[in-house]
Length: 614
Image 1 (cartoon, one colour):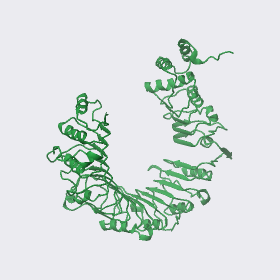
Image 2 (cartoon, rainbow, N blue to C red):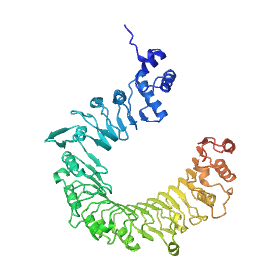
Image 3 (tube, rainbow, N blue to C red):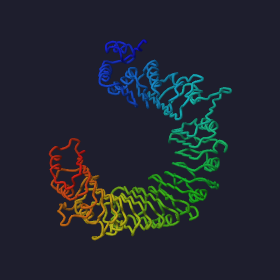
């Protein structure tokens, strides 16, 4: 029986001689190949990138290609990315793609920075390719019959087709009648047209006529593209399957065009996004299946006073509403609060920098959302609300992000912030570095809270979270932000920021009042700016119950080798009888050996505690 000779059975010198006659072979690649072959059989990477003028990328890339010829195993290449800003020969690219096809490539990406790409013919027989991305590529010709048999995702970014029919041929099915380009995409479900140019209207019509089961449509224009993308609204039969429609800065031929467009897909539409697209219309549209509506940065001056109400009236089962404004939207979005009948089904509401006629309009809006469970409020310096009154008995989740810039003199003269009364609340997230007033009424159902606030809070603010199980807290104030004697009987996981001058007092207080605490994490997410004298750790007269009975995990991020930090660490390690793991990490990339040694010398009462240094 004749033994089959494999390439990697040949002497190294002969292998290098063979490879040296192949394209783009270098000595650096040769060294890498031979060393890899002798160290272990080839375990080829599954993600390969070739980037021009990147030597490391080149060596890895070419080592993969020539190494794949030495490998005995069947290899699978997950992704190949070619980023080439100079012209490589078509034969080079054909060779690389052919090897990728031989290794069952799944994703293929070309970025030629405007260079010309001749599509390798081997792609027509590649049954593993699922995703193709072309960016800044010029394609002069797509041969008739060229197909991508298993492709599921095609992305074209700044792709120029020199021939009129090439774009249709690339989409596989093409036929021409009197030189008219037509598409046939019977399986297409998702279509994105981004930065649509002036001739997109005709292209869009052809595309939509070819997609009988299209469900997801995104159309975007830029400020330079002034021509209406929908000069003619496609017939209803061509949009009847669309479930998700995104119109991003899209120009329409007239004010009624948006209503006409929505009518054509009203029967199946569930998700609608209008970003800087005028939706001013007087005609009633029935969006009977719409569940999610996003109104992002609408041009307020073009919206009729009752347009928003009319739009909401057309959505009887709407559950998710997002409204966002910017500095250019100088008119209040809610000049008239829609009646309760328009808002009764909304369960999730997001308000981002939204302007109101007055603070009382906020309370009215929230009161009319009778089924509201999730509320997100993002504030910037562009909104005009001073005090948000959130009185929602059905609310389960509340997220507040107040990132407005420095307070003005007028802000200091009166209260601005949040008054929260939500007895059914379960999850609370607050990041507020601006407000001077925060009031939280009793919330017995909250189990998870993430609180980062600057201002003085009422002592009931955190003290009202009697059922909290997971608490992340950053409170730079020197005072304990809750009434002395409060107990957190269910608190199991605590993350505490060490950026305040009095953080050790706060830590000691919470440890004493959280008998079931199992996990403690200390971190410094912000630069410490102490306006008050720094507090110093004092050994507790009585060891907190949680250290004696429950604490298992202790983690300290941005640990510093100071006397203060060592005292806190020593107290916890010496008293936490159930501790299983204590992890310390520093800001420095190089661990301080002396710091590690000092921590290792600290007494640990738990015999099973493992020290980890990162």
